[in-house]
Image 1 (spheres, rainbow, N blue to C red):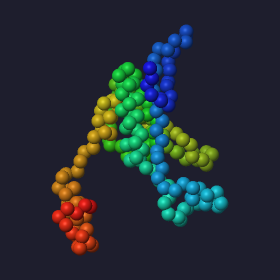
Image 2: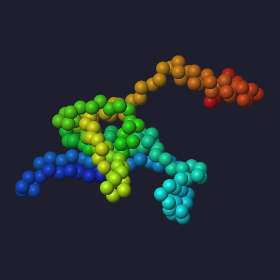
Image 3: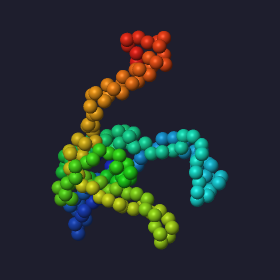
Image 4: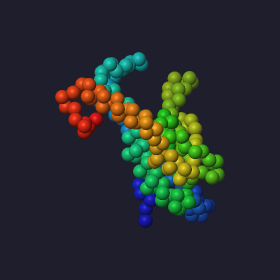
Length: 185
């Protein structure tokens, strides 16, 4: 029997070495979109502190894909198993990634199923370097958090229809010869 491919498991054990409790730890990285090779090569050829990439397609975090393709499926599958076992879960995540998620209902540490461990790079005046540091811990209920990240709150229908109308008007204006009552946007 397995709980999937869990990143880490924290184990509590007694003086005889018998497990008394455990919790899962999932570390969620962020997908990168863009070209990594070209800016890296340029920096390695000219490694200066004030490096700025002037080329196109600079790498950037893809938070939306990271949540939809990685975080949510892992919460559903592995998180569901640990919740069924009544075991706690930790999700280690970059603070800026967490900030892109819908606002999660917070609960007390004692009532929580999930501890979101938020990390960021924090500059140290002492040694002049950035250090990966725990900057916050957010406690949530499994089901409440899952509901928030799975189901979106749609904009008003009238706003969406206005957006569609604008796109249709643009299509008709720029391509009047291809106008038909069934134009795809």
